Structure formats: C-alpha cells, structure tokens
Image 1: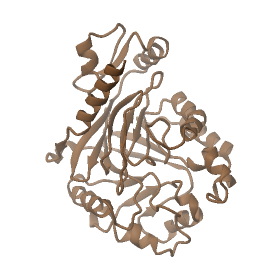
Image 2: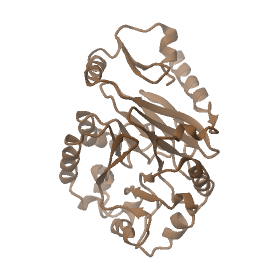
Image 3: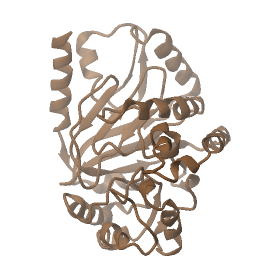
Image 4: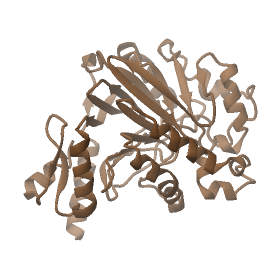
Amino acid sequence: MKIKSLFILLFLSVFTFAHAQLTDYSIFDKKFNFYVANDLGRNGYYDQKPIAELMGTMGEEIGPEFVLATGDVHHFDGVRSVNDPLWMTNYELIYSHPELMIDWFSILGNHEYRGSTQAVLDYTNISRRWSMPDRYYTKVFEEKGATIRIVWIDTTPLIDKYRNESDKYPDACKQDISKQLSWLESVLASAKEDWIIVAGHHPIYAYTPKEESERLDMQKRVDSILRKHNVDMYICGHIHNFQHIRVPGSDIDYVVNSAASLARKVEPIEGTKFCSPEPGFSVCSIDKKELNLRMIDKKGNVLYTVTRKKVSSLLKKEILLSEKNTHDKGRLLRDEGGALIYYSTPLPRQMQRKSQVH
C-alpha cells in the first residue's frame, strides 16, 4: 500500500511540473474565452504584479471576455469603504494593462468578510469594470453557438466556522443560508444551457491544511444541489494552488484555481487528477461541444488542461450509476480525444496508469 501511494505521489509530482509553453494561440479562436483569477491582493508583491502583466499580454492574443474573480481580491482584512486605498494598491494599479479593462465578475472571499462586504458590492458604482450586482448571482452568455450559464455563490456564510466567529467575520452570520440555497436550487433547476459552471470561493473537495469542517459544510450544503442538477464544473480558490479533483458518483469537475500572487504547497488526495503549487491563473475556453480550462503558471506555461466533452444523457446516467455502485470494478476514462468512455470491467494495469493523464 505504501509503495502504491509513493508511486501515485511520484507520478503526480512528475506530471505537476510537465508543462508546455503556450505559443499557438489559435486554440482560442472561435471560442468563448474568459480568465479565472483569485487570491490576488498583496499590493503587487510576491508574484501578483508579474502575473497581472502576463494576464494582460496574453490577453492581447486570447481576447478574454471577462475575468471571473473567485474571491479574496483583498487579503487580510478586506476593505473599509469604496475609498479604501487598497482598491488602488491591490487592484486598479496592478491590473492596469489595457486588455484587462474588461468586466471583472467577482464574489466575496473570507478575507473580504473581515471588512465591509457592502463596500465590495458598492464598488460596482465606482469602477467601470468591477461588476458585482449582488452577493450571489447568475449570468448567461451566448456566443459561437454555445450557451453558458455561470452561477456565482457566496460561500463564506455557508460555512459554520465563519458564522461562529462574528468578531472576525461580522457579516457572515447575518446572511440567510436557506435563502441562498433555495435560490441556487431554483436557478439550477431551470438551467437549460449547454454548459453550467458554478463559482465559489471555498472548495468542496481539495487538499488543504485548513479545517476539514469547511469542506464538510460545503459538501453538505452545496454539493448535493450541484450533483442533482448536472453542473459541469465547480471553480473555486482559497487554497492558493492548482487542483483538479473527481469523486465517485459525481460527474462534476472540481477545480481549485491557484493564487495570482502567493501560492502554497499541495499534495494529492483521493480523487486528485492533477495538482501544482505554482501561482497563476486559468483560461476557460468554450464552444458548443467542448469546455477546456487551462491552468497557466507565472511564466505562461500551460500546466494542465481540464477537458469536458458533451456526452448523451443516457450514457451519463449509466456512468454515474456504475461509478456509484461498482466504482471499484469499472472506470470512467477519457480517450485521447477527450471523450468520456466508461469501462465496465477492471482495466489492465497499463491502462489504469494511462487513465491518470487526461
């Protein structure tokens, strides 16, 4: 068992640092592209400013529609008002490249909850590009023949740890959990788009030294709703590294986006498909048939790509049922083209090893 664990760790470690310099930008042509960035606010220090510059220069080729900012734009104690100097030193003067003068659709992280959360929402009325209509909200995008629904949720109040520390997170306990979850259920129940992505600050599954209660609360309150309504991907931040996780019984790709400033070490856990301690951001590219999320490090290397291709609803049901009941007897794999294939019998060892890379 120890040898197997060491092999998995070695494999993931080797794969973590196997990267490719992005030179062919044609892969973004005729796609709906947007950035994912979070855990930013370090006043330009660590790797924040170089990554911000990289986002801008790459934007000249990619042309992102917007930035999906999954929280902690301001670290430590958030902001006190819309006039707080941190808006300039953490955000405006750092992300100053012309290609980043696009919409930033943000959500609150736990660090914003240490300050005035209302000021973060109200900054929408100050900045031309900051766009945060509410604590949780949804938008539908239609382009290149594809429809994409993104749902932004407010995760800090959904975790008991923060609600119980009212001195440090004063606004968390004031939020209505039931109201938000009912809204989430309603939005996803009526969603008919080609792709459905949910974004929150906190992970549902992830390696982290942070308290396990955070993930357990998210699994209890959020994950069951996402699974019920066939969400394609859950994207979050908070952990300051890259992770891609899949769990038995769920067809959701759980993605942790790394910090765009100060990153932290990471280890594989059960369900880990990829992990890396590199700082950076991600580029999500979508068309009618395929969704790709590319994890980019601070040097512009593509560390890893999460790929989803549409499969029939019947095949998806068969896959989920088989994974739930006999996940030790069969495997859900992707072929070399990225298509989902379910193998109902145990795989030869060489195929098991090959299936780890997709």
